[in-house]
Image (cartoon, rainbow, N blue to C red; front, side, top):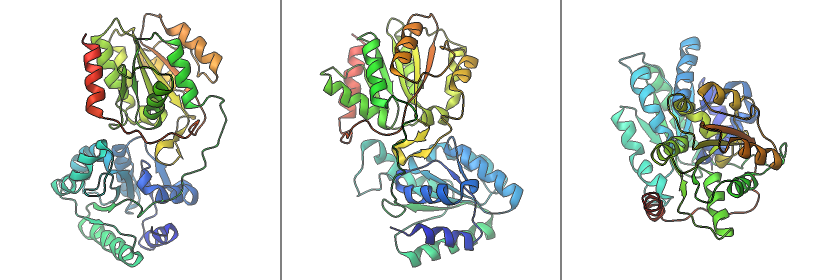
Length: 374
């Protein structure tokens, strides 16, 4: 594990003092050090493509090389701006890409990371972005940063540094904040209790999928109505919308997260064009990127309810912050005749210790497909 003080000292020595990206568990030490020591120079972005755009603007305004950090699962979000904004044939923008390598071949990881890990280097090759794989050797890191910065300056092009597990690791941020009374698990259980038994659920990437899965086990309930969006962060609501359009007789509920919803917030505008009164979009808002380390999001700072109303959702006109408020909101919106939305403010942290989510993705989705097509 690299000493993060050394990491940032080396970056500063070579003029890299601006950081933007999406937090990643493999980069937890890096992300936390930037958050705690350079709050004005560290921009946590809505998504990885957003970070590339911010970094490009920083270079245009300062001529200084920025650093963009991300998990490799977010590489799909950066392909377009790298190819059509940053590329040498367009605006030729130098930047360092620090990429957490989930699914690195030979190391073992969850299925949603396997293909991404396999193609990480190939995607960079296709985009003509050179790279190095980092190790926890300090001297090698010092040399890699010098090489990367020199390459960026000389060629005015991006250079990538790929970080395997543990190289940029660190402790998670303390998640014991209890501003709001409900935990995520408690909120999900209230929703399960109040909605019809045949409701279809689409749970977002991270903790929501785990808690829904294990709540079903604890309650001795079937999982065949549950879609667990273990990858493709930010797309749980789109999957749910596709189901809702095809099954208008069934209630379809999105169990979204604040960071996931912001990652692809444009998806919320779809209900302005469609009649989906069976569709309920719930954001379990803890104001954090909790699954990857607990770094703050903008979840508590923005008014999701007003955004949802502007997009065409029916709402209760304010966030809900407790069990009784949530029950009342569900009752008010259950048969409102329009797509509906609730921002549920919850506190950070798991309500209990849960094991990793280990299940057969193919068996789970085939069971859901079979149930939806009876």
